[in-house]
Image 1 (spheres, rainbow, N blue to C red):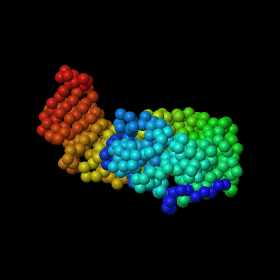
Image 2 (image 1 turned 30 degrees about the vertical axis):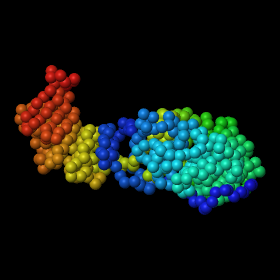
Image 3 (image 1 turned 90 degrees about the vertical axis):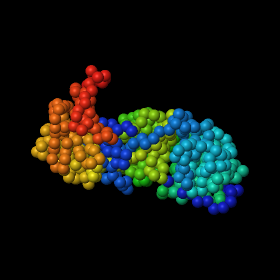
Image 4 (image 1 turned 180 degrees about the horizontal axis):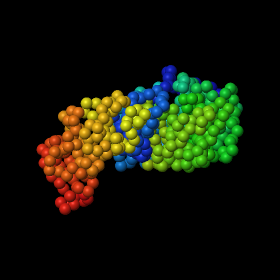
Length: 496
């Protein structure tokens, strides 16, 4: 083992939709979007430290960036977040860019990073910590950006090789650098090199990870997996079906399990003396795993050739459940400090946010299943049309009011809801037109001049106070001061 002081000076410190139809109604409070499904109601909840029982996890693609959206990379292979919270993205041959939440800018064309990146464009890896942003290159060693200043590290500074292949920052803040010839550990001002004498083979290092127990895991381009628990790196015997393919990802979960993504060999979970393999029969299509990341709830996100997956509730004794989110090849995954998951794909960059939404159904007091409409109540809470059970007001997780035939509603088959700024609630029904709730009374609306047998499909109150009603078979109606105007196919409407 060779230890050498680097030429750098000073101490270093290193350091964070599409919704499938199912049972329930999804409501994102704030911007309030609603998806009508079948069965209870799901309302937004505050962020929780761990996933509670009875809460539905719902990863939502918050935003996507492609070349046409200003992303300067056709493929986002590497992502990292610096200590100031900015996201950095890089492509293998397309350079380095910083994202400020609005635009992607190259260093030197950025007020926050006026110094242009002076290194080569063939990048291999990114890592960020308290000491700055680190960039590994294919031929010219390692670069660090700290406080707006670039610094270059090569074999002249003690690096084992200038062909950098992997970067990783451990829990202590040490930087691990894999190269085409040897492993390097940056501690403060010194570089420690590990080679054949310490058990590191001569093949290039593909990935490196130091877990919370202090064990160091190393994967090589020849598919070897090594682990250092003492003074030497010891090879881990290959599993059944694990050939000479390379290992493309190493990741430690919050439960201490180490996940290994194997080219064409699927995903392996190491914990204590147990090993579990995930392949196609476990729901992981296309067994080439490129990237891994864990969200704040402990679910494992898996980027692969077959797409993006989420593995939930995997433990020592339970394999968990694999869910596919996207069919797009995903090369990189990263969780930012706010808990969002960033996925670098074959066509751009995607951001996912993982909502936790409590479910409300008949067990929480709803009178039944089959939710047909949901509307935020002006005074707080949510109005819910519950199939053939009328309308209820859900507030604070409890049913506060209910309107059905017992209160004078013409039918319990409610199909649409609308509310005006004065708090008045309009109720559209199947085959019984529209009713208005005034106080605790239900009044047919309007009281004259309109066919009361309308099958109402949708309603909208406009800024003038007119009520627009879309019907099934009777066209479009507008009610202005109690007077109805109707448009049908005879008036040019595409369909009644």
